[in-house]
Amino acid sequence: MHIPDMIQELERPFISVELLPPRQDREQNAFWNAVETMKTMNPLFTAVTCGAGGSGSMGTLKTSCELVQGHGLTVMPHVTCVHSQLSGLKRHLENIQIGGIRNVLAVRGDYPAGVESAPEGLRYASDLVERIGELAPDVAVGVAAYPDGHPESKSILEDIRFLKHKLDAGAAFGVTQLFFDNRRYFDMIDRLAAMGCNKPVIPSILPVRSMGQIKRVMELCDAPVPGKFLHAIEAAHAKGGDDAVKEYGIGMAADQISSLLENGAPGVHLYPFNRAEMCVEVMQRAGLAA
Image 1 (cartoon, rainbow, N blue to C red):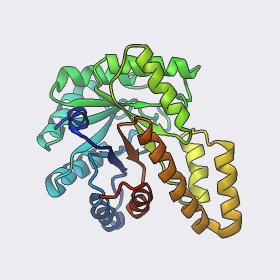
Image 2: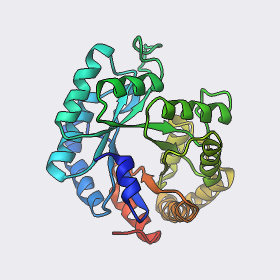
Image 3: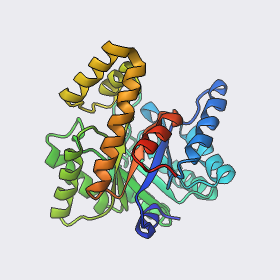
């Protein structure tokens, strides 16, 4: 079933989850244990990433198919420009549908080392959205949204216009990059509505579990961390190490989720980085445990 239709039919807020497909054999057990834990939260859908640089698209597809066929989950694999060629995109989409998948997230992706341009005809995510619409019209396409603005955009307003362009190109919904200031999300939604676009955009939340993690997020995702939040994390770490950071992160994520849902967000998308137990704690704290 298509994710936008599922959202429309719901009478309650939902959660969805992002998973990283296992890269090595030694990661398999931990990954599938995380899946079993995640299923206790009854997620509306599960996104499966392609990894840095758009790598691992076959691993993404294999994992996605196993989640559908072996676990009965609604799955949304990432499809990237940087790891696609027009000549192979049709076959890739056919394999996705053969696996029982009816939703994808179309993203440009980060260029791998040594690559400075995307394949011809797939320079932007909007190009990929249009091609998927032509080649696989029965697949619902989601796109990435950036409440804090994409690092390559000149301004947040310009970035919101790009988001609207992707949605107008055929995308049915958006999923945000992680953020820590809910005002940014609602400002983006209000600006989209003022432009005449009311397609659902799902906010993404990261439960922070360690000092090292928040530093990696700042480096890899270019997600700005509010000074007050960062200071609180540093203070927690100084007082009790990563255990204290995790406890603070659970409470912060639960409060952020509650505020989002109380103010009209349709649901929340969680980034557990395959650590599902912490997400269960967050949902229990937010009063949303299944």
